[in-house]
Image (cartoon, rainbow, N blue to C red):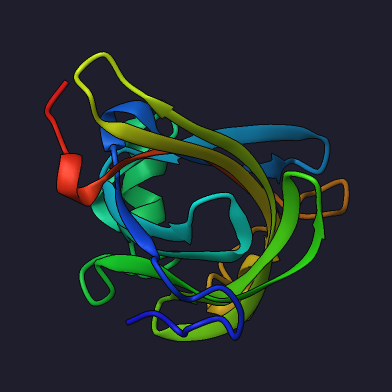
Amino acid sequence: MFVENTSAVVDLQTYIVDAAHSQVRFSVRHLGFSKVRGQFNSFDGTVRMSANELDSLQAAASVDIASITTGDDKRDAHLRSDDFFDAENHPSLTFESTGVRDISGTSCILDGQLTIRGTTKPVALETEWLGEVTDPWGGARVALEATTTINRKEFGLNWNQMLEAGGVLVGENVEITLEIQAVRQDEREES
């Protein structure tokens, strides 16, 4: 379900996220100074927009928690557990846009609702619209990049471990980066 923006809602085109050419990545501080990076390998979503009308941008996505990977199987299993995402009871996280603001050229803020572990909070994605092209198979493709930072504790991901020297094992702030390519629904081709 999309929340319709108040402007430019005529002739919205629907684009399906091409997961083979997109990424949902994150990073979080470890031991207070370095970062652990990871990604989700299974997700889907849609982007809707009128041609060349950034103020009409809408997006929705669902991410499969079980697909989390950080390059360490033990850590990935811990992230899926009740200490963090509780994938058994909350198998996906979702995003639903609610509006666009602060448009400047190809940049904007895409506001929306992010749901993790059954908790929904507003988030603001700093978004760069990269444009639309026709791929070699004749499909119309769009691309965008977006970033945001959330406090994981606001979504019930509270687990941590105190360090002997002070501080905590896992930082609270999580940087999220989306690199999205999507193909217009009526022209979707496998590639």
